[in-house]
Each structure stands twice: as C-alpha cells, then as structure tokens.
Figure (tube, rainbow, N blue to C red):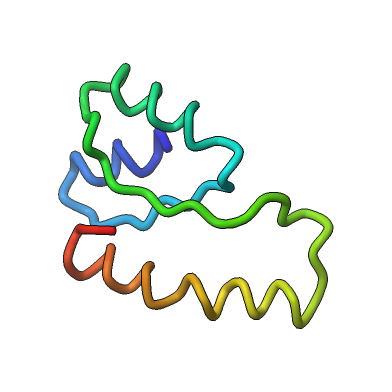
Length: 75
C-alpha cells in the first residue's frame, strides 16, 4: 500500500493488490496517509497456498480490473 501511494504521488500509475482479509487495514492506512479514496484491488485470501491453474485463474479474473485501474485510475 505504501509503495502504491508513494508511486502514485510521483505520477506513476499503480495497481495495488491486497487480499480481502486486509481491507480494513488498507482502509485505515489510506486514511492515515491522507488519501482515503486511494484505489486498490482485493482478491480472495489466501494466495500463498494456491497452486498452478487455480492461481492462474485468480490472476485472469483480476487482470481486467488491474488494467482498468492502471488506465482509468478507478476500481
């Protein structure tokens, strides 16, 4: 989250991705950093134990949202 906020403040588009269990933390952090409306994407938790095809499927599902965030700045 911090890297995304920092890079965006320098004019570099980012697509910050977190897992859904961290949404409350992300919301609190973006408020703390002074950017309460900072856009980020959430994917299902966990990801560390997801293998091969299942992880690829998650990435395919998330990819259009990543593109939209990078190109339009909205989730």
